[in-house]
Length: 127
Image (cartoon, rainbow, N blue to C red; front, side, top):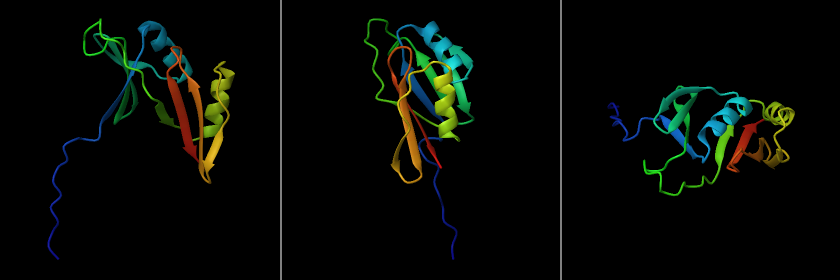
């Protein structure tokens, strides 16, 4: 059998999730406290939080580098937790109004809440 050549892909697997906020400093403080993430970089109008070696969350208060452009609204930031029930409880203990844990598939669970600027966040996990 001959060796199969697998070409490099156009994208490298690293992901930056952009969330646009009006009040950047308040959002940075909220995400730091609620999600227990600390910003690892700041570039101009964006703070970056490292989730893992391949994924970063960016909070930004400008769009296309022009302050007059309207900020886009994210459909939903989706994060995965190893222990969905512990994550739900931790957020409740911090005073976050979280929705109920839903179980739409046999081993899959999820719940929703919103950030300080009403951006929707889902946390999901598998049991």
